[in-house]
Image 1 (tube, rainbow, N blue to C red):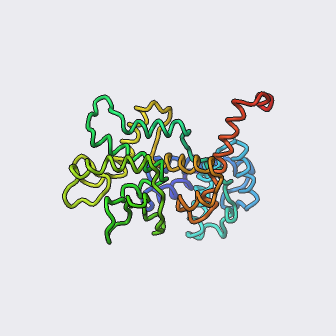
Image 2: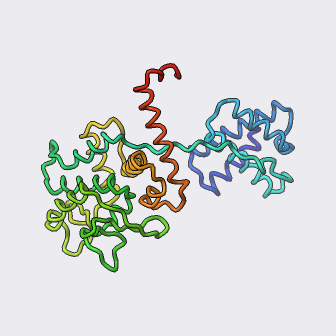
Image 3: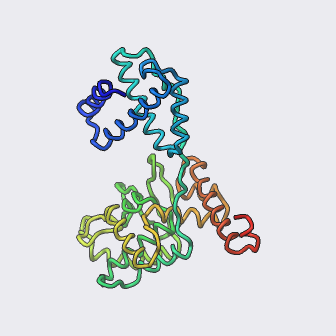
Amino acid sequence: MPNADIEPYLQHLAVERRLAARTLALYRAALTQLNIAAQGDGVTLRDAQPHHLRRWMAGLRAQKLAPRSIALVLSAWRGLYRWWGQRAEVGHNPLDGLHAPKAPKPLPKALSVDQAVALADQGGRPRVGHDNEALRARDHAVVELLYGCGLRIGELVALDAMASSLSSGWIDRADRSAHVLGKGGKRRSVPVGSAAAAAIERWLPMRAALARGDEPALFVSQRGARLSASQVRARLAQLARAAGLPTHVHPHMLRHSFASHLLQSSGDLRAVQELLGHANITTTQIYTKLDHQHLARVYDAAHPRAKARR
């Protein structure tokens, strides 16, 4: 595309839309691709028709660009034609009705059972340079609840030590259940296993000595205030490194591990959906694919004919 056509639109993006320099560079590169394609077909961009754009999009696929990259290029092209349309410089947008290929959704990453157990065990062990027994007890309870109950990080940090009219979540020690407020304001109750219950009972006396007098949070920092999501992420990453896990561990990975391991053991998709608080079972079904991956790894490692299928 000649600079006389590129620059006014890019100037619009920079000044009126205030796009970042990196984004502007990506738009410039995408529009350059558009111009090269048009020149190859001997048409001007303002005269391009939908069949031209379909062929040029096919060219992007032929370059083996990832679906997300194609979507970014098409977004830049579509934006240019939309801008021209607003200025009455073209009569139609030839990209109307054209869509980028769908990007495959990556499967959630889950720990193996051994890794999850090692991480939970690590939470209660003394660590070099960290001899604070209260924080060890807290971290252990955090890991046990994340893995044992499949809680979201927001649900975990919102837990209060006792139920009140202001609580969005709490632990019922009598019936060993966690009551949380999930996405969309949906409440659910999740059983608290024996390991998590024991970790909470160990933490609570230490919490009482650490928490501020008016702080209701179940999990508090050294300063006595409610533990934040970022603090939990940092502590979990430290525990994972100390446990020697070969991957970056974040709180949602423990939720994925909870779901995957429960489904592997029970096969009850509806029960897992209820425990996770998913509104739609199709969201839960992603864990059946993780279960299939687990079975495939077992097959590859153990079956005498496994090598023949590779």
